[in-house]
Length: 210
Image 1: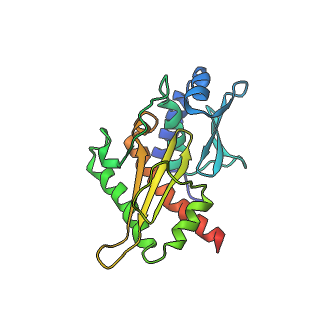
Image 2: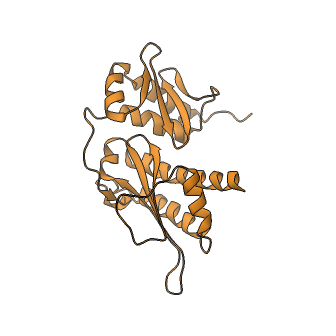
């Protein structure tokens, strides 16, 4: 069995120690999640998997700890919870966030979208089926794309997924947008990780449909 990365373990335990369960009423009202105050536990759906988060740890319904990235996303989501739900819901790209100035993170965000674009070049029906399997719904505004869908990543943090297949003039292109208020719930590094989890979720949804 592979030994846990000691740095990851330290960070994970530090985040757990920072959890303040007196904020549970705020988590309910602002994040729109379910909590069990007696057990000091929050229930958070991340894409299509429900997790339980408490000072004791992060586990899925089988009491298994998810990978480090998912743990960080879920813990930061609780730790960053603002006092009130922000109202700025306009859709923006990663580069448009005020905290996106780290070159490495921008590159990783671009690479995730590029990987999705290459994966679905010439096969529009595949992302359509995968997005539908992930609970995607049409956005309120019409977008001039072959595929436009809003996907539930976390409560209060939907993703706007846009995809144009390749044609005679342009290559395929995927775009991943968040509401501007997402910066109040997750930092730049976590939003990049959510992009990569979206890619993995699309892959898994395809496999389930085969």
